[in-house]
Image 1 (cartoon, rainbow, N blue to C red):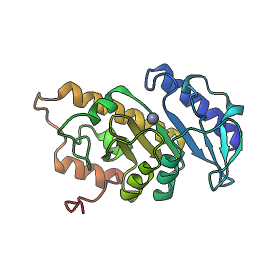
Image 2: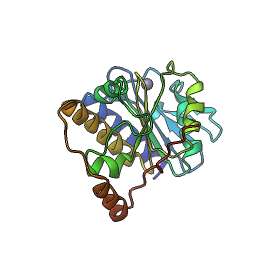
Image 3: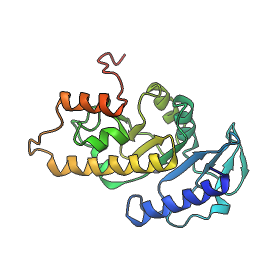
Image 4: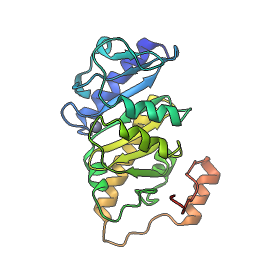
Length: 221
Ligand SMILES: [Zn+2]
């Protein structure tokens, strides 16, 4: 996709996410890899609701600002995701209410923040990791992302929000929406003893649709 089209797509998806209340105020950010090796990023303190295609931050391959406004302070977060997930072409980070709420619950498994509730959650967002709290813009979040070794396309930052990678911007946006809706379902059903997908049903999705889930690891050292 040409850079002009990518710029327009970032603004269109940003407005859509903002207008549906999926990230308030000037929260959230989006980045996309460009064909020239650089990337486009939403500027710092910019609302996703009214981005200007011409003012998006254009960074070169090593993350230096080439044109546009000053980029989001979450650059270390985005670059660590690209570094560890070679296939990722776009990243969406929101402050969406239900996903943020989920991160504060005591029972959340940091290697599977949500149970297998629906097929589309698994097909779009895979399994979701939960990272501890970091001050926004703290470069230490990059080390925590590297610690996941690229095994998760969707990650939750505690008390903050989701970070989702996709092989297109559309895929990253749709996966973020699926994660938010599944977090909402989890909160609706919490303590009601719901039936989740069984291991056999999950396995069927893995073999039928090629869903990639992180390998089960019980050694967290
Ligand atoms: Zn944020």
